[in-house]
Length: 146
Image (cartoon, rainbow, N blue to C red; front, top):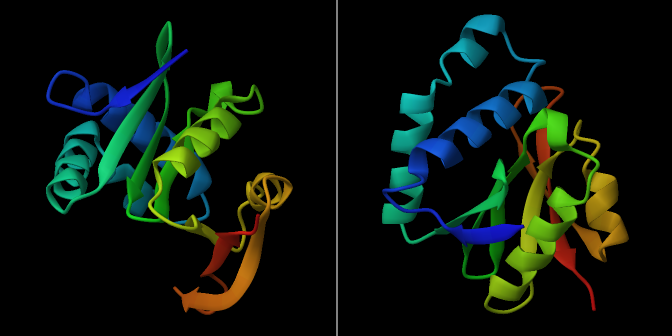
């Protein structure tokens, strides 16, 4: 298993992982919204993330499996291919991202995402900050407590 920075040589692979994982985690959205997440669009998105100062990483285990981004103490865009979930890759990416953080790690997670339990098991606690995204959808901010 290798975790390396996303760059020009592997950004298409990272974009593919991001797209496939995002599509599943956001399957509650209308199909036309999900369909707009092409590899090309996600490649442009990842370039914009990198250009804004985020460090984006790709986890590969014979083939690309997951991605994560870190900006200061903020962990973002942690995604693992649906077929590769529940095999330890998400935990490996989270542990890696925690080590990359400057200060106490913080992240947000959709209220309907079951991965929140993994974050809790790793020591993340809800801060009470909520980011509304719709009437039944919001992001929950979590902070690592040591």
